[in-house]
Image (cartoon, rainbow, N blue to C red; front, side, top):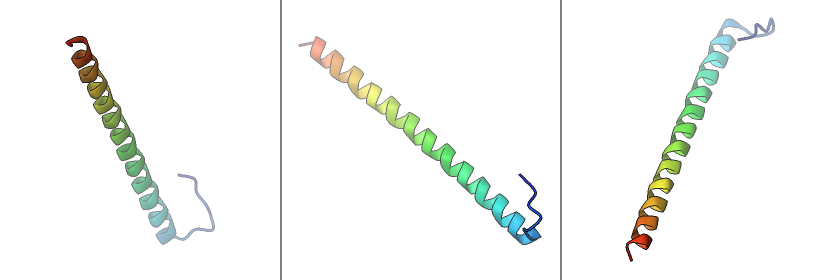
Length: 54
């Protein structure tokens, strides 16, 4: 993290905590996106196999 001479120690801690929370939220969003993609692929695959079996 960049050192900003205008921030107090408390502000540094708060900034670091917010950055950490933001990174965790970004990771969670990516995980949900990947899960949604996999679920969509399963649905497409299931639909394709049902269409072929008719």
